[in-house]
Each structure stands twice: as C-alpha cells, then as structure tokens.
Length: 368
Ligand SMILES: *Cc1c(COP(=O)(O)O)cnc(C)c1O
Image (tube, rainbow, N blue to C red; front, side, top):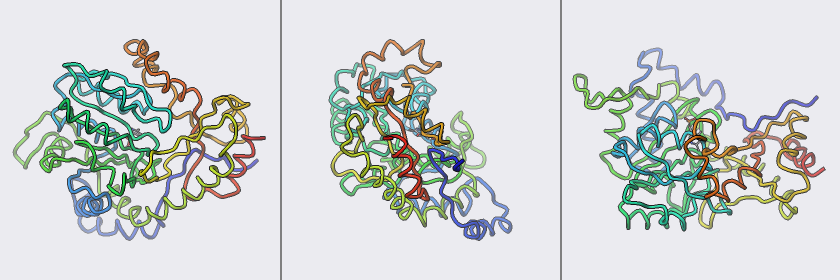
C-alpha cells in the first residue's frame, strides 16, 4: 500500500532553524504577552503584508471575532455574508450578537456575488463580512463602492489569502479589517495563530486590549473580554516560516500546474479561478465535478480507497449545518450557486513538498 496522502501537509522550517529561533526564550523566560518574538514577527508581517496596522491572535477565528468587536459591530444588526465558507465566519457574526443575511456566490471564483448585495441591504444592515474563498479575492472594488454608499463596515475573512495581492496591493489593505489564519493547515502557519489587519490606525491598540481580557495597562481593564493571545513559540514559528513563504507558494504552484495541465478541457470538470489582477497563493486546489462521468462523491470514494484524502470543502453549506439548520435552512434556495458548488466541489491534496508522481497518480485515479 502506498503512503496515505492527506489534503494538506504543514510546511515547517528545518528543526535546527526553529531551535535557533527559540533558544533565547530560555534566557528571557518571556513566553507570551507580546514578548520580543511577538514584536519582531509583527514588524516583519507589516512589511510582508504591506499593512501598517495589524495585531496577532491565538488563532484566526478569535482574530475575526475580535476584529469585528473592535470595529464596534457587537451591538446588533444584520451582516451580509455567504454560506459558502468555513463555519467560523458565520460563528463570528452570530457570537457578536449579529444576524447573518446570506448572499449567493458567483460561479467563477465562488466569492460573494457583489451584484446581489444591494438587494439584501435593509435599514438594519451594519456590515458585509465576505470570505476570499481559496485565496480568490472578492470583488473588493464593487464591495467598497456599495459599502461607501450605504455606510457599511467591510470585514474580510482572508483566512485562505495570506500573501495574495490585488493589482499589486496586499489583500489586507482592503476593507475595514481582514483576518488571516495561521493554523497548521494553512499556507503560512504558526502552529495556531491569526492576524487581523485594519484600515484605522487606532484599531490595533483596541484589538490588543480585547485579546488580553480588556487590559489596557497593568491596572486598567477597559473591556469585558477574553484571552486570545499568541505565544512566543508560535511567533518564533512564524518568523521562521516567513523566511520561506515565497518559495512555499512557488512549490505549491508547481503542483497546481500539474493538476491544471491534466484537468483543463475535461468535460464536466470546472476549475474555479481568481478574477483578473488577483495573484494566487495556491492555498487549495478546488475542483467542481458537475456533469463529469463520475459524481463528486464517487470521485471521493475511489480516492479514499487509495488512501488519498481530499476534502469536500465547503460542504455542507453553513446554512445546512446542524447548529444553523433550524434558523437558516430556509435561505438555501436563495443561494443556488453556492448550493451547487457545495455539492460538486472537492479540494484535492496540495502542499509544497507534494511529488509530481503523487499529483499525477491522483489525476489518473480520477480520470481512470
Ligand atoms: C481556517 C479558517 C478559519 C479559522 O481559522 P483558525 O485559525 O483555524 O481559527 C476561518 N475562516 C476560514 C475561511 C478558514 O479556512
């Protein structure tokens, strides 16, 4: 039997490189709470992402939840979002006491269909929370225009989009805030971790207080909040991985190119692509099996038999998950494109050190 192939495999620095990076923690004994690693990592990220205003978090989910709170969005109201995303996006809306209003996605890149947003705006709408699905940037220009007209906040779930740019501008520069996940399974990982970028230079200070129980100085607690701090070992992992990220993305591209070459032009196989001007980080390789001679579930089954583990990512739609079905399953018929994508999508294995042979074998099994 061949070795199992997972949907992804974490990129790590050389062991010695990481050990060298964490060595001084045995001197400083400063293991969390914005230590030297945290500060250095933040500075490097500002440069890499091209975003002067950012904060670090224990994970992407809390980064998004706290970014929304920092922007003053926890006071009720409606938020326009999509059901074709990680449940985390919707949980952040709901946990901030807001009501998600679900908009369909467009069929080309599966991000929010900006042309439908305005029809969903009511007097209660306060924000748009949209996901750059698979690192494919939303139509940020159209969204900005709508938000400006209706005075709405815009927050992007950029969990998949580390390193992506739109016409040369870092993706974290769009909207009022964006969240990047640095989870072990993402393109850029810090074991667990998250980043929020902000338009407003005052936001990082508020967000940082919110990640630390609301403390603002040793004797002052300004907000009722939680603990969402990134620790020094995670920041050190980030510092190491940031040295290699451009190479990582290129190696992912090489695998993605193999898939592209084999799948392009095959009847019933659709390869979603980002819009013009959007650079790629190859965080996922999504394929839609719609009208192909095998159904998506049959493709999944034959791959599993070969110990290859793709993901039905994103299926089910958030609106059909057990925790939301009672409240929102009646909205599924309003998002037919998202529904159809969820039923036909498979994210194929993709990671930087995947071999040419493995990529070709996966294609052969699917087409065989
Ligand atoms: C991974 C992910 C999250 C959550 O990030 P964590 O770092 O795992 O908390 C949120 N949204 C999307 C789209 C994701 O893929």
